[in-house]
Image (cartoon, rainbow, N blue to C red; front, side):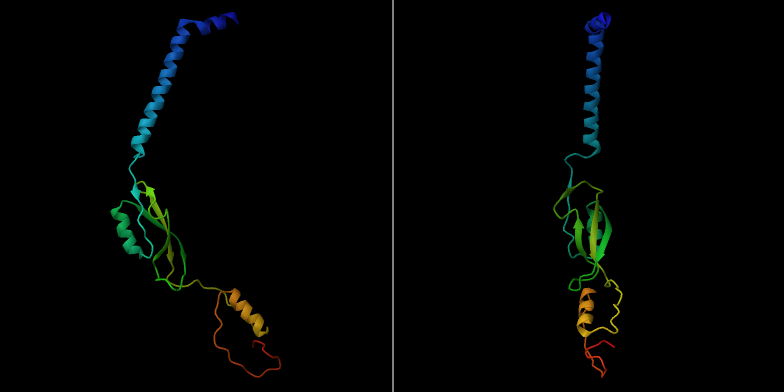
Length: 153
């Protein structure tokens, strides 16, 4: 144990320890400088607002700004133009690096198809509820004589 403590106090060990610490600090400094250059630190692009733009127009802007895009999802909103950008991520105004991918949610060209609920043999009130739950709109009603009052035929 005495020899080990003596070695730790020796000039050769202290010299090697100082050299190892300096080498580690130099490696860390080089790593940080490399990362600063590689990641284009301080160089960013503001994301434009693509709301209500059709995809071809949005694509032109993306190419000019050296970005990329992907259509992530589509929704159907009846009162908005078909095929336009409804939502984007990252949001407009956020700072990103060049070649960053922008994810779009677009307004679908056709509404999503759903299964028609089975309405036969139930009351008009139940049928109206099932229609509303399915997201449909009740149209014109026509009545025919039947033994059941207000039953869907």
